[in-house]
Length: 79
Image 1 (cartoon, rainbow, N blue to C red):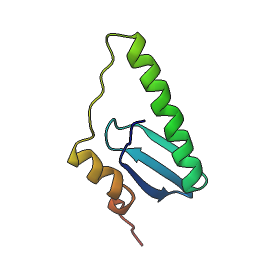
Image 2 (tube, rainbow, N blue to C red):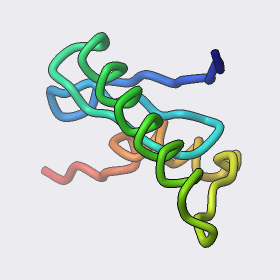
Image 3 (tube, rainbow, N blue to C red):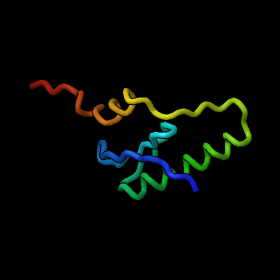
């Protein structure tokens, strides 16, 4: 059994789970649903990775994590 580090955040009414080891995401209406979708994506990636030779996977870099965490906060509001 493998363990992954996941960051959860709420965005536009949905929950998004980001896997730090491979950059995959899962989206759902609640944290549990988003994690479930992320698990499905990870399982699919593992299946493909075992059968294909030209699949790139790498941990997410700190800049990508920062963008994931702050993307909505960077929008400007004008009145």
